[in-house]
Image 1: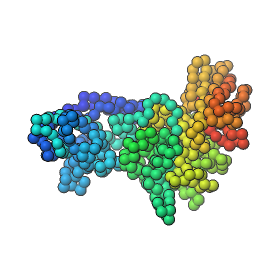
Image 2 (image 1 turned 30 degrees about the vertical axis):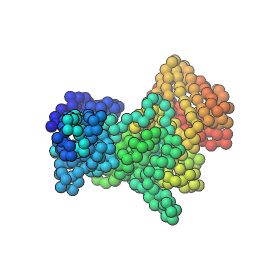
Image 3 (image 1 turned 135 degrees about the horizontal axis):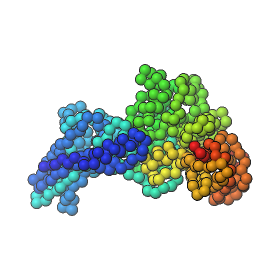
Image 4 (image 1 turned 45 degrees about the horizontal axis):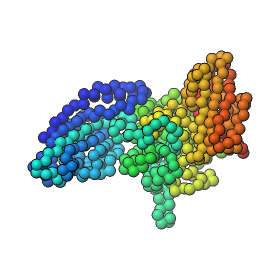
Length: 510
């Protein structure tokens, strides 16, 4: 027997969706859409029981959490999922986990291992219960909580599937751009005799070995890697795997971070006539869109790589710029920093980020003019916790700096204050005419280097010692407020001028 109880908090879920559409963060999706209850007795041993439930139109994900009583009496219940076509349909049995999993998800693109992704057909579905053991005099009460996902939901919902990997605010280190077997990433085969599509597991293992906290798996126009992520994430419980893709067009590339939802990338087609149409689609998916390697050729040397829109682009629809791609901070020709600062001077609050653009998970060191290992550069994010939502929101907010060489022993912070009001990188601070903006920086692991201050795109020389003399040092200077709009940020350069750190701005009077 079983009973269905509709979630009384469905209205709150609709409110949460409405807030998300408006750009308001909401991770309170903890209430299931359905709760199924039932009881098994000793007579159910060695039988299969179907527990029906109805899936409405417009669902693209089913997530199930299943619990039962009686384990102390050795009761065992195996678990599977049938779609409306049943065992005789082309998919039918969408998965059978036995007793190995009590939480699983089935979506159109990805599914928990032992389940198959694919279309979620509306109609009567069934949980399939197999009972290998229950004692004659025993009973077992079970509860199945079911969440329905919908197109456009943030990738971190339902929350039960995506708990934080680490609680507490901190600086988390990651790489936001890389490629593997799901696009053009390759590495040498086991024998070393051939280059082959590089398995995603090697990419993840390399990132973990390098001590990163998160990576965004961003293959060209592909989201199929999301299914691999479902398998890998539970094991890599210290490394957050963020679904992403490099939106690859003939007029430039951009990463859409934090979404595996469909996106029409056919720029120039009838349905996607220009970048604004494409970016309008991306806005509904709750991720972050960054323009990748904007200063690249767009010809036979690198087809579609450079940012070359044929129509004006509303940059309000963009959230970030890949200011550092691989080792291009060493090159004044290909560095994206100047392009990024041009957008800042136009009044856009765009977060400067970095990405290795790695195409070979087994590459130990950068190759001249070639590929870059994972984690070079590293994007360092000040987030409230290590979770997908927190990392995406912190990038959107600009709480970021770029470690161009990906050195885990290096860290940097930049804070500005006026009359007790404090702003970190990415924040806005009011600085009236005649006020004093007190800037404090904290640098670790960069003895012998020096800070470089940029105001509105120009290097300035404030009063104060900006040389970094020790392994752990605070630096500060005062800047006189004039009541006008400005942005201030800092770089750190080695003694030979090599760029080590690229900081994001604090915005004044904006």
